Length: 288
Length: 305
Image (cartoon, rainbow over all chains, first blue to last red; front, side, top):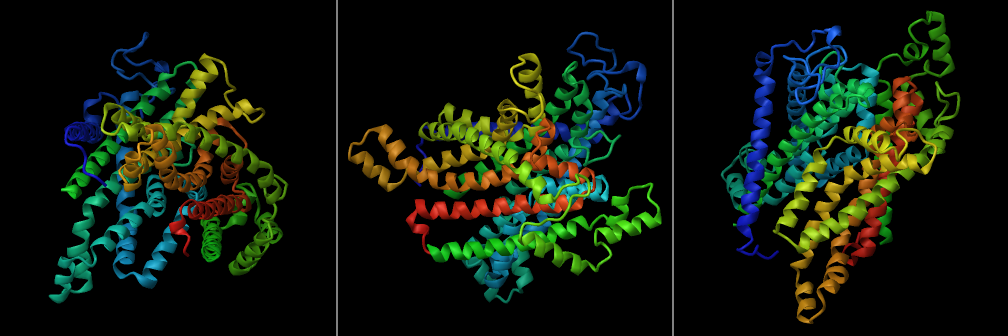
């Protein structure tokens, strides 16, 4: 590929960095809200108040003082539930990425490093995994074994490792015969040492990009599962569950699905912006 | 070419067999199926009758091989809930899901290929950034939420489309749009990067040097080469879309295979769950096979096995 033309390059990098910064800020704010938000919001996310049902948020008429984002169909404070939901989304995103990352990176690095039969087996595992319909299987597992946060994480973790494996395998193949790996091998380094000390650190940046993508995907999938009633069980305020509960009222008060939906959208967009920024940084590094 | 097809076919069959094993294990996760089928009010005697009637008293490996053996000839057994054979149920529902998938894929291609070309030929301009931003936004919108918003806007406020159901072609419009939306970001990015790579290649430089018009270079020379990965991904994407259509079908109460899967999960109707997982996987495997063959036809360099 030809080098980018100099006049245009500043525009791309400027916009790229701006996107990355925006992403970091979004994810940062939501993370802070998830961690300490329940101390800032004067309401409990589970306390019902049937006299104050479906009060609209502050930008609409008929709003109730003290309930900034209104109340849901059981009179629970929407902001408090939203903040608690952020905790669930982030927790599921992070835990899923850790689980799927462990599986995918192990498989990918082993396949890429050793090649041959091992690589054939890894490729077969990836192909099989890709042919399994994720949503259906996740729904079936949760449907048969009962809903719960841990089960959702375990299911998604076992299903979303494919991209980790693909990227870890490809990048390991690229570097396994580079000079510094060979040098370490000649110096008598053991295979585990080579894999952990030489290979892993050098493919970590690529895996970080995958991690952002998978985290965004896991958060969206959890929301979809909870929306279908087979994810995080009520009364936990998962954003997907909040949208499901608001669905019956959406034709009269559309904000009940808009508020958690927009929150979900902003969080996923923020994570994707971070991932895109990381990828651009890597890209410019490679061309140098 | 034939060798390539034969090898891919063999691999596909092996994958299908693995998926069958996994699907079988999956439905045994809940413990004793006879108890969950019988329901909470059943007596011990009822459970025993059900265990016998459904063959659940046999050893697991016997159950497995009898299921695999019958599934090979298209017999997936009887549904516990619908009082119909599973094959009949799927045959009735599959056309709906396939229609939805094709509507979604066509819409996605109609939107993403021009967008990708536009972004590529105007690389690094604000237009290009705009398209990239659009794909980022598209990726972040939860599909079930987009579905609800469309219901409010198109169904209620404008009143031009039915909100849910399966009856007419209008029932496929909103689900089709939502399904297309799940594929547009990836397809747009792929068209864009493929076009950028093609535009920077030697044969485009040659075409330019010959003095060919810009439109001819873009559409005749560059697009043909950029289309290879797009065609290959489009087929694979259709497989993903069919698998992912379960959420959309459920939201819109569109009675396709995905909706059937959701219903049978809720009803503990495990022969149907097993079969739906297998059918969706088989479609995906078939589509990747097709995409490999298409690729080899489009790009002679890939024809050696």
